[in-house]
Length: 215
Image: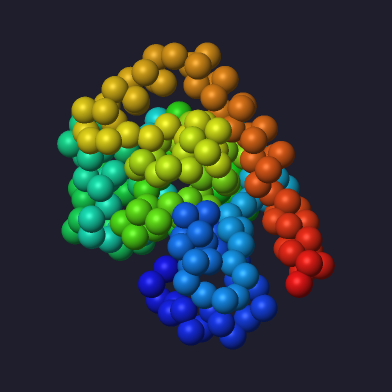
């Protein structure tokens, strides 16, 4: 978020920011009208479809970079994690790396077929509560997501994102949902319903049109 300065915002009639917290901050600092417009997902692209070839117990999809706390934490447990993404060479044991790339049209199968999907955020995105688009995509697939802690896990996602703090808490959450499939199913169905109702591209387009009509 700090790559855009306030002077740049003033060049526009309206500014949309994918964080309610950051939108409130910027809205107090500039004259241009600022609106929160969270990320969203497409139910025609992301939907439940299990595939045996895409099955993993614990899945992580993302590039290898420093300070991915959730990866550091999961590797301290006894749970094996299946990783897809570039730049993991020499960062983790190669036995965990299953591939460098999943085509977007296949991604919903991997999300749908795993027991748990891990998610994280860049530090500044987490602090300013910019929820990852992966959360919306995964919930549409009825996927159980465990993520680093962000405030919107409760407000935006209706407590359907499981968050954790520290290795012990991560282990506790994994064990609980691995051993309580009915609770997991209840949560994931609720999560999909929430995204379908509130967080699709149609929802966002409707909001943008509404704002433009008021300018």
